[in-house]
Each structure stands twice: as C-alpha cells, then as structure tokens.
Length: 68
Image 1 (cartoon, rainbow, N blue to C red):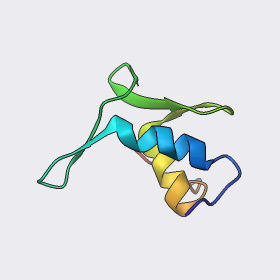
Image 2: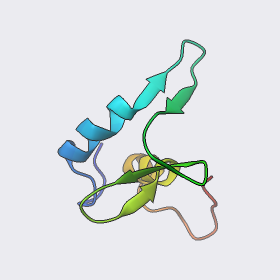
Image 3: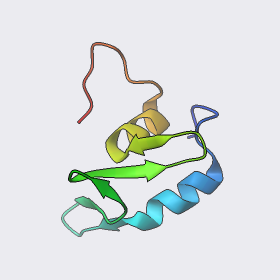
C-alpha cells in the first residue's frame, strides 16, 4: 500500500532486501545505520527505517504519537 508520493515501487524494491526475516517473527535491518538506528535513503530524504515503514503503511505519523 503506497500512501504517499514519497514512496515509490523502486524504493520498496530496495528496502525489503535489506531486512532479514527471522523465524521468530523479528525483522533485522541489514542496511545502513546511523548511531545504531537503521536508515534508508530515497530520492527525497533519508529516513529512520521505523518511520519510513510506519508512514508507508499508515501515512504521516500523528503529532501526538512517537515512533521508535
């Protein structure tokens, strides 16, 4: 579900191979990290991985919600 023009199919094709899916259900980020936090760069910006995926699924993060 692409909820914004910030998310392209090409970006998602690059995003998912950077995740290791464990049998226990955990997702381990294998891509770039800054200070221990996974980051993903699109043409528009560099995202923290958890924010990128949340906004991809649900849209912008509400002001009263923290995503970390």
